[in-house]
Each structure stands twice: as C-alpha cells, then as structure tokens.
Image (cartoon, rainbow, N blue to C red; front, side, top):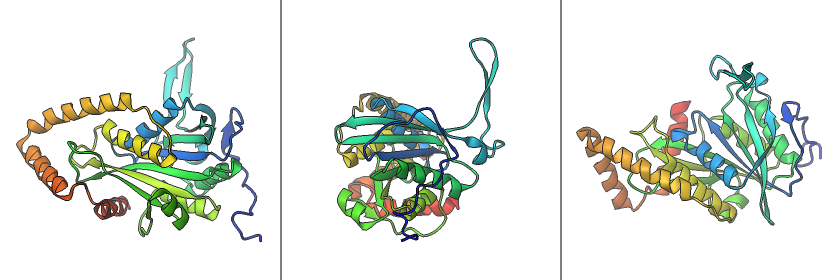
Length: 290
C-alpha cells in the first residue's frame, strides 16, 4: 500500500555528501549530537570512542547549509600547510565499520542542527533505509542528581514493543517538549525502522565538565546491547583521573561536599538510582529544555 512506511521509496538523499559508498549488511546506526543532550560531552565521547575502536571509516557528511544557523554554530577559519585560509563548516559525519561477521555499524556524530529538523531527520532515516539498517540507536546524556563517586546510571528506552522486549529496554511513554533525538525516533517509526535510546546521568554540580565516566558507562551499555566486546582501558584511565580531580574540587567546598554526601547516601540506600527515578529525570530534563 502507498501509505505503508515500509513500502515507501527511500527519499532522495540530496543533503548527503558522499565520499564513498560502503557495502554493509543490515547495519546498526548509532548517533550522538553535540549540544543540549550531550551533558559532559558523554554521548559524543562514547560514540567517537566506539568509532575509533572499530576503526570506522568516514564515507559521507550532511551538508550543513540547510540545517545550521551559523550565528549559533559558527564555522571556524584555519590556515592549511601552504598558509591558505580554509573554512571548516559544522558537519554531521558518517562513518562505517564491520565489527564482526554478524555486525556492521554506521556512526553519526555532529552538532545538533538548529533548522529544518523534519527534513534533517528524513535524511537520516532515509540513509538508514538506504542501507537497510536493522536498528537506530541514539545516545544522550543529561544532568541529574547523582554523585560522581558512584557508578553512572544509564537508562535505555525503546520505541516499539519488539525492541524493548528483545533488548530489555523500557518502553518510551514520554510526552512533552523534545529535541532532535525525539524527532529522529519519530522519523524512524514513520519509515518502519526500529530504534532505541540510551541516556547517561551526569552530576548536576558538574554542568561544564567533560565526563569520561559517563562516556564509559554509555560505551559499556551500547556494547552489551550490541553483544560485542569493548576495550574501555583508555576511558577507564580517564575516568579515574576525572574522579580524583573532582574529589579535590568537591573537598575544597564545604557546601558542595555536603551535597555530594547527601547524594551518596540516597544512592546507597536505593542501591542505584531507580529506573523509574532516572526516567523521571530524563523526562524532567526534556521538559526543562522545552
């Protein structure tokens, strides 16, 4: 039928700039966007770490001209080796890798666009359909009332029952303001693509600090979901240094130190931030952004 999203033709990918056309077998598309849903740079850190570990090879970018307000996400100028001035425009970069005999992946990382979200997400979902992707995963991070001294909670949600049951994820029931990830999941559903999201919690008292610890938690959770091994040695080393540095800063401020002890006590009494509480944190975060 014409109105069946699975039967619709793949839309023209006029905003995709190809450098090569990889041959992939039903890949998993993993995405992370810089900006509002990347607290502590954890989401982009995680996906970039996976891409590097898998030796993902870039094959395309999304042309930024249509989707970015360059007064908000500014291009940068640099001098090349010959001393000529070059403009580096904000881009969404796509790379591909064969992780195992059973798993091909596409990684997508870049700044959240400001403009034409529907068109942008149609391009991403169209690209996923072009490669007959089996699953689309969005990776995000948010600020929440969690202590940096405890394991980072990660919440997983799925957008249809089959995916939630297969991967042990919570069904998504959120209603309210959303970001580019929410629009992308809707575009995937309309295109007949299965999708899921992973969210890590970053301490609210560290809003501007990169969090390799949350990035590490997302890498581990994504690896479990995909049933692949992940070498996390580098992120573990960075996480230990991060925790030590934050400990020194917290110990130097009595008010923050008391607050962290309160969070630790609440965390220990619960054993971990309860799934329902983390879901509430995710939903509160989305509404606050709106």
